Amino acid sequence: METTNPKSEPTIMKLKPIEATPESFKEFGQVIESSPDGEKFGPNDAQLDLSKGIPRFYIMNLQSRTLKFSTITHHASVTQCLGSIGGNVWYLGVAKPSLVDSEEVKKDKGKTAAVESRFGHFYVPQAIDDVHVFRISGPKFIKLNVGTWHAGPLFKADAMDFYNLELSDTNVVDHTTHSFKENGVIFSFDD
View 1 (cartoon, rainbow, N blue to C red):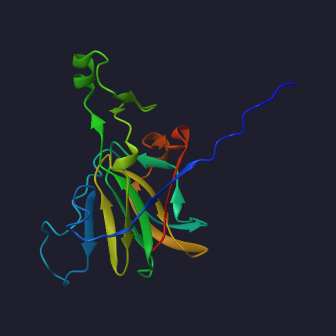
View 2 (view 1 turned 180 degrees about the vertical axis):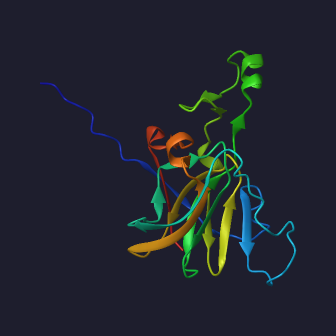
């Protein structure tokens, strides 16, 4: 009689949300808060890189984005801005950018853990311990640095609307995803 091993249950990694502030989020991008009308451009404004295409600013409706994830994504060619319409609370899983210059990969001759994306750039897959969750509340938005890994927006409501600034073809030509499911890991959190 043939027996099969039952599939093992995934490991649930419980994360504690960190309140997103300009200081707490600086390794991943910026938290942009309101400023007086007429204030001159400065370091508290979103430092954008939209130079590799046509910017797209739109409202996206998301549904059923529970407080767990097993994949993260990065964009190697553009910054991205996300914010909830109405300032409702939402969450974003993140990890620092891990892009690797292609010349470094050639010099290392396969010694690095770099992987080539389907879009031709190189990156080092994120370790489980490098993933964090941020809580975003009130009238502010998040600017993600080029290459910042992210999962979300995630939220408790059934549906939410978000404004999103990226390039018109970001999700077609610059959308690299890493799955932790292969390692049997799901990230989860409560507020």
